[in-house]
Image (cartoon, rainbow, N blue to C red; front, side, top):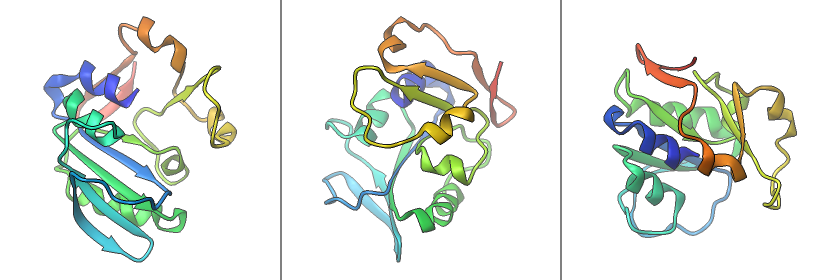
Length: 155
């Protein structure tokens, strides 16, 4: 969904952010921006790999940040990333856990009937502005959202 949205708004110079609680091995193309106890922040530079962050760049994001974050440090890490993003820049962030700390302009949640769910996100399903099934994404031409006056809005 993040890549699809980035591709739908190529004129906006979107900054994309992916946040994960998994501290797996770092891959090529990630430039370390910051490392503190509880989180590490990278900027993605590789457009041609299987990684979600690479796919975001390939979809047209102007810049992409990747953060490995313990839940206790999520708000601090996100705020640090946002200090690098110019005011008024549209941001698309892939992070269900961030919804516990931040109120987005538009919150989109994806569900799936065919993919085995790894996380219990049922508590988030009462919060979305827009909810979609992964299986329906190819049949969607547009979404009822826009970026106006420095903010994502649900139309």
